[in-house]
Amino acid sequence: MSAAVDYLAQEKIWFDKLRYDEAERHFYERMNGTSHPAQELGANSILQDIARARENIQKSLAGSAANGTGDQGELVTQIKILELENHSLRQVVEDLRSALSKLECRVSVLEKSPSPAPCTNATSVQLKTTSAPVEEEDDDDDMDLFGSDDEEDAEAERIKEQRLKEYAEKKAKKPTLIAKSSILLDVKPWDDETDMAKLEECVRSVVADGLLWGQSKLVPVGYGIRKLQIQCVVEDNKVGTDLLEEEITKFEDYVQSVDVAAFNKI
Image (cartoon, rainbow, N blue to C red; front, side, top):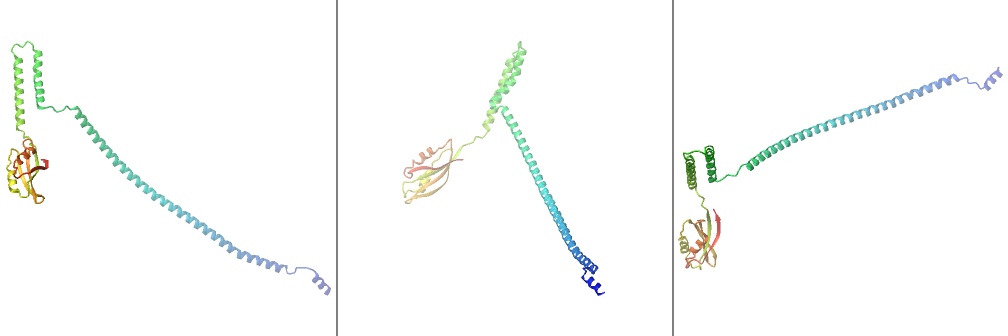
């Protein structure tokens, strides 16, 4: 019996294989149990990343669409503004064309119309027109024995003289424009002892048709000497500066010289 036990003890037989198998099974089950949550956690993180990426993509697409809509609206507004400006410019161009065409029509009419003739020419033209039927009648009736040609010529001559007379009377009634000038004279005395009141009296004593004396004043010259500055209005066809200087310088006791300080047409 003891020999059998010693033999079995020396034999290499695995009597606890079931226990080791059970332990190995538990070990692998434990390993598998701890590995599943880690895999699920990795899968969840990947899914979250994918969802986050999708959300970012959708946001970027929405933002680009909004920006595109805004740019498109601004572009449409600018196009409308340009259309309005183009319409206004077209209206301006049409107005200019219309004004230019009217101006060209007026210029063409003025170029075609004859220049206005004097009244005498108009009278002669009218007389020619009135005498034209007479000439035609003369051509038609060359055998007039009652002197109708002489009567017509006398009538035309009478009408001509009457119209010339009316024109002369009308022209005579028309007021004529009188050319006038305003003259400022500097009348200088001999010295400071000259009586300036008497000098002015002598100057104003010059009288002529078309001469009207105005205001005067004494202007200092130097060394106590003063000159008389006097204004007058003259009619150009009646009184001139030469006449005034000649008449004023006749008063030799008071007047040394006469100068024209200002000369203006009225």
